[in-house]
Length: 183
Length: 122
Image 1 (cartoon, rainbow over the protein chains, first blue to last red):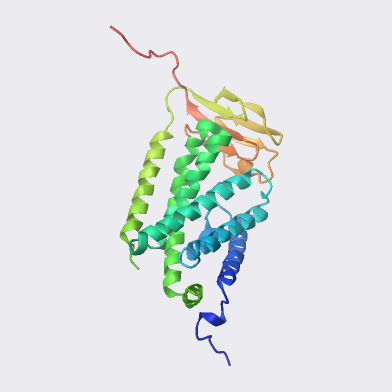
Image 2: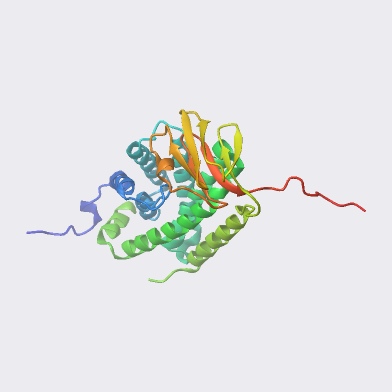
């Protein structure tokens, strides 16, 4: 009948395997994000960042950055903004937030959980986008956007972090992936 | 599951940032309310009380901003996602509507008193 693989070896051959699977999750979650109706049109749930949040304790930096790039491409293809200047917001926001999450995770060690890492990412991403909006598009007026974006980032970042923390603590799939990525 | 110390630091730092940015974004609520429209290079100011339609040129085409009964909304836009058209009309100082693709930003402000005294010297 059904037999569970004894360890991660059978499920994941290498880090590229894990990156590819998490990248596919980014595409899938970007689609879900795009389909969910929002009370405010500028609102983002940020659920497509969940694979990146999981990868922070899983992948080496090089593969981790590659995953972040895959997420940007996936999101831009799905929202139709790949070759417009809007993609700059997505690219800069995601990459800088990914680096911030990596640093928070590395420096924080046992003093931080996925919740803190997720909030660091959400707030950094939104701040970067506010700054770009200020510098290249709207000028001083962009400051008005800040409270809404920071407030939303805090709420969605906390929610996503709580989910990720529960997931990493209880998922056998995650445990197997972590095992495989050690090699 | 328990939150770790640095989680709380992240939450408190974000809250501090939220409060600071709210204070920074505060606009004057006094006097007559005006609609400030920022386009690619130009800024237009109109009274909120007079109904009118404003055509704002942007990189993609013309965005139509409508002022009606003390409310402002974007009536039409050449952008692909139409997010700006979907937003509810604004009517209070500090509220804003933006169209990122066509680079139009609309906000309501209290009138700034330019004729006030800057400094007194005795």
